[in-house]
Figure 1 (cartoon, rainbow, N blue to C red):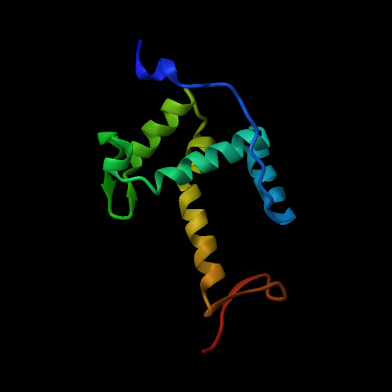
Figure 2: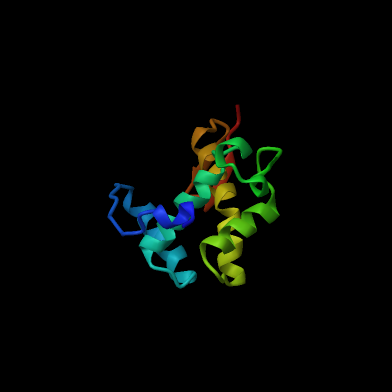
Length: 127
């Protein structure tokens, strides 16, 4: 019996509260990937967790770090281990979600870049 045989695979729910616009965006992305919202959020959480693990944390040498995050091949291998098959779009989304999160956080924290609905996008504020 392997260690994986001892893992409890029963399902349970987890709740969180997010702004309506964020849920709507997640739903659009999930629909594009032909995923349920629950499956999409679970995948995002798993992908995000990998960004917080180091090689010693995960114990997986394939999860070695290069620069600020896991190398691309390691991310792909991890995604395909979690789900046997992914479409091109699903794979692109899986490996780029961290970039989107980092961009969103940077934009929220930036005092120089502001969203301008009137101009239809992001603008550089004069200092």
